[in-house]
Image (cartoon, rainbow, N blue to C red):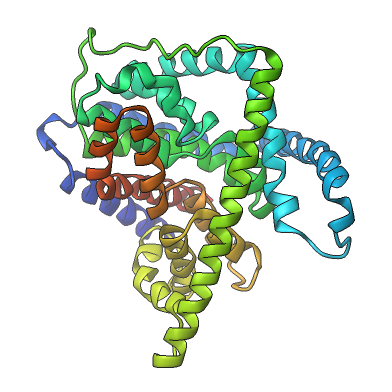
Length: 393
């Protein structure tokens, strides 16, 4: 029965995407079918094979070691403030972002990441039937983040059509930055985080290929990325450390605001109608949770978490899931966890539009205009990845 519901859910998700398409006649079905098959193969390898278990264990151990090293710096600065018997979300989850960001800066300066991103992007363009720039941007987004990635394509922004710009922005919203993956692994099981990263990469291409199909000529398909002025090693290191700190502080501020606001709204709703706002969202999203494979008796609570991610951000939803108050089955936990690993939420519309506008005001206004459709596409990517996981586990 789970497989039947999952397949129906997959058809519904692809059907909704097709209905929202800009040009249904231009949709290229062969690359889409190939990428869906690749999603199933890669998802199965990562979740159900010894090779996948070893790979994920290696990645998890690697990030675990990095978090330990980050702890050295955190303890030196905040050691006197830490209560050893209590877990500090700010220190244990957010502050390590600073160290991971520093490592990314070093790899950027040594030209290791640009090399990897460029050639993985070129390889992906052979599979997805899209432009080289789109493929490059998708990989770069998964490493640099949804706002920073646009700096690397600054030179091309003013030359892009609205449809190509949509694909670049959808990729940025559908993925997450490598600097915060370690933080996600504190809240979710590493195998679900890694699986979501892989599935979302292909899912972004699949949804964009249906919802926003277009052809790219050889002349338009430039891959040359923006060369920034030459900086010394320590200039780059300092810049990335500060960027990581800004991300951590920004996330902390967003969490404080959203969690407090949700608590306030919950209290107001409960006082007036006897049911909290999040419980209402749970009932609204329960059908969506059901069609991606969550059993009906868990669908309301699962819908609650999924809706929380959409209206606030993934950290708020992950924290709710990590608290263990819902007692989900392992399969439901897998589905929800994969759904949560992306930047698909309302606040990301402003973040991406602002990032593009800071580099090219005209294109930033274009992004703001298709903001809701951008969120629709990125959310469909999350649904697609979660549905595939539900069929695999």
